[in-house]
Amino acid sequence: MFKLLGKIPELLDQHERRRLWMALAIGLAIGVGDMIGVMSVIPFLIVAADPSSIEEKPSFAKVYDIFGFSDDALFLIALAVCSLITISVVTSLRIFGLFYMRRFARGQSVSFASRLFAQYMQKSLDRTHTRHSASLISNIQSEVERVVNGVMMNSVRLFANGSTAIFLVLLLIVVEPVAAITMGLLLGCGYGTVFAAVSGRIRHLGAERVHANAQAAKTLGEALAGSREIWLYGMQGFYRSRFEEAYRRKNEAQTMAELLRDVPKSVLELLTFGTMILLVIWSLSEGAQSSGALPLVVLYAFAAARLIPALQRVYAAATALRTDLPSLDALWADLTKAELEGSLAADAGTAPRLERTLELKGISYRYPGSRQFAIRDLSLTVPAGSLVGIVGATGAGKSTILDLMAGLLTPESGSISVDGTSIDDRNRSQWRKRVAYVPQEISLIQGSIRENIEFGFHDAHHAKYCIWRAGAFAGLDPLIADLQDGYDTKLHERGINLSVGQRQRIGIARAVYREPDLLVMDESTSALDALSEAELNAAVASLRGKTTVVIAAHRLSSVRKCDMIFVIADGHEIEAGSYSELIAGGSHFRSLVNADM
Image 1 (cartoon, rainbow, N blue to C red):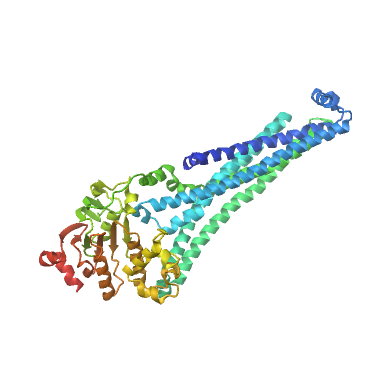
Image 2: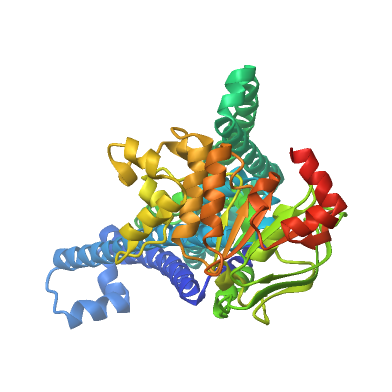
């Protein structure tokens, strides 16, 4: 537990660490302040119980003379006012501490969530796709709060309230050493025994909650994404039972963890209160006179009013922290600062413009967890401004090649270069900005058609003209003409109010709008009818000499006008040439053409 807590500063940048140390310093100051607040009551209690102590105690007499008091009652009032002011200052410090810690927690939640989002968006495609998207969403929306409020802030609360308890016990030791030490041992053993008894179980329940929460999010995501098939096959009950089971396990784990935190807390409250009573009885049994015993009794009562809540908060913070440590385990790798800096460092370099050639040399790649290479020792050259087709059977590696070209995947061996400049970790993200990609499944946001074409890439000076031009290129004019609001028409979630072909056209318009160096099209005309496909193929052919276009296709009509076609099988090139050359001499290509007829 302490080893993992020691890693918390590693998750923070320099400014955040300073704020964390400030929070701990405020917690320590509150502990010292509580002790001073209790101490400030002692002079008042002594004088109130025995006014003659003003003359008997030199410190009282000196203060009495310095300030020129002439009446014992006024002196007592002055002591009461000083005590009240001291306690008010300590209370103000506590309020400020609560405000500061809440503000720190809110800011840290935003920081961690933003960093996680950046991590997930910066990671290469293969590393992101090995994890379920619902798990990543759960990490940002749920587990971040657990790490900040459950781990970080409970660590601060543990330190702050622990400091208060320690300083108050030290004060009582000074006043009544034997009784206070005995009380400290009883409380320490009691709290330690209870915490040791429930600690392991609480940690296990925390891990179970994290796992069940991820399962519930995963099931919900799958159910909403596949709603058409679920309705068709009558699978609502199946998904509901899966979701209900995961959610039930999550709530059971959370409820049991709360019980293990709250029930022992009530027992420990009884232990603390009983120990304070024993301390009072001890003082009275020592034979103190009533005038001397009264200040001690009141002091113990006042100290107990501070000590009991502090000990309660210590136990609550420790158990809550133990419950939420699995959340820190779950996010540790993603929140590691070094990993984040490594991924963001990719922005430091610059990528060249594609003006001569895009070259793949000896490229090999396999997906994480797979023994089989998806791409094996592949070498090919794409001249700038040309139209290149990549064809092959399903599973040949066409989409993987496109992802490698676009910088979405990192090759295991070999190199990718643009005009002789290698594309690597230093400039890969910059290269992606020069690439436009039309995938098989178009991702649409819940906004207007215009916003979906812009997709966050907005240039106010020529955006309207470029959107019209991109839309016309993709064949969107008939659709736009039928819509009352044209390009400002709002789309439903995932564009479900559009046909698949219309969604593909928006994806094509989005890619062309960005005016890329490299346009990559992965089965991007598969949902179009033959006439629409022919029109789009003619439009793509018009880009020759202006934009480098690489097309992966099953329907070979899409690559008929390409300057060069690479035939891929089992992750490597087996034939290459123009359409007519391959028809004349490419046996594998001819078999693909015959199968496509």
